[in-house]
Length: 382
Image (tube, one colour):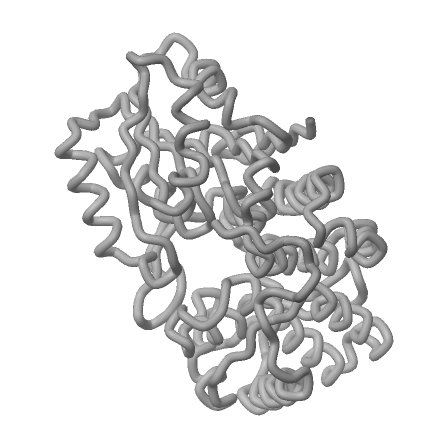
């Protein structure tokens, strides 16, 4: 069972990846808290709880059952109003400084719970128990928490590391095919920015990975987490190196905002954004065409990526709200070769527009894409 230690100047915690972790959740929580008393509050969605709630509760004794708080599924609920509802529920339930929050869900639930933990009573501890591939490979690790505004994604939040991350790969068995594929876009990102070995593994083992093979998925999750943990350890607060984790996210976030966070999964938007960033790298002569084609081919191999409706001009205007911008200058992470990227801080509006137009043209060329591929063998519903 892979275990990765993330150490930063402000935090140190374990990321455990493997099968059957939710059954050991109570024992792991007790170990984390040691002799200190705690009262567990579990944040999840009705859909996830309907699938896994009984198994989670079965591990807790009668006197240690967690208080379960629900939030609706979907990026559109990652807002301050949802946070306020949860804050009121915690207060009404008598949560005090001994409260221990458990984020049991995907990236939205993880981000909200982490921010909730940061601000309730000026800070209570929390644990990440991610249930989606995207959350396991990326969003549960690194301590970034927050919610969205109308103006853009994750514009309100804080750095707040969990006590631990427990990524149970069994939970991926009920993940819809589209969510599995969307999560794998973040793993492709990890390969592009820092791990050519992971990229090659994704190229060579697509069939096993997409079929939900636990061994293959565990390797993908562990390799992806190692990339992120290594980057975060070197740059906890995104002052430099950590920005490479935003490969594909500048235009990806703009696509999400332009479509009201309703048309695409986050990983799908990152996939299109990664294609745009790769194209921009070709335009600038930073990456050669053969390498770029290899990247784009793998992104599309782990599709289909849902199509979206947004004018290129609209996407470019929305990138102005990206929180990675500095003094009005648009920052972009561009590939130099597989496993190596560069941060460019002088991307012009015209360059961005050309990359967006090229990406939309490619999307149209790819044709209508369905979220489920016939014969994929993964049509279970979360």
